[in-house]
Length: 118
Image (cartoon, rainbow, N blue to C red; front, side, top):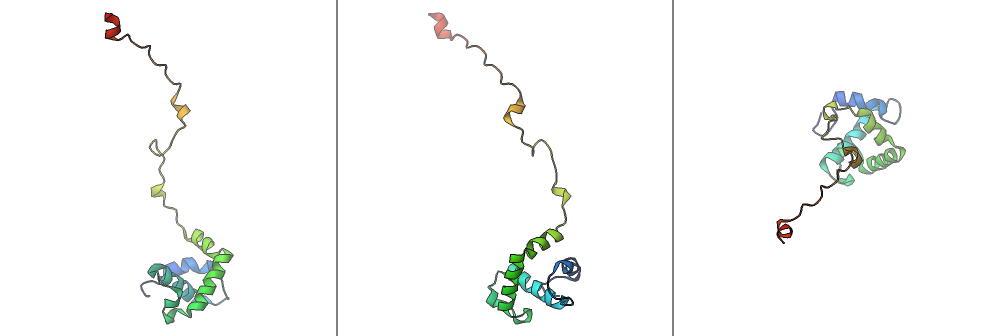
């Protein structure tokens, strides 16, 4: 396994959601590895290594998958909820300002010392 490619456990998670020919597992895996390489390195499609396939084929297939919603479905399928980030307490919940109770009336103004001296 190379640096920007799927490990075996990752591929086992992704494989059922990959589209393509039946028995096209190697082709699907190579294609996804090509997309991951491009995303992780930030290179242009034309700069994909030859071992990952023809850049134009990969780019066209990426677009077909994007238009068909495959990437969104795949993203949703591989998400594992991280319940460590789920916390509800008074610092995270905002109440409506009316929930603070009735506004208190202001106390009557006190006569100032200067006014009282005159």
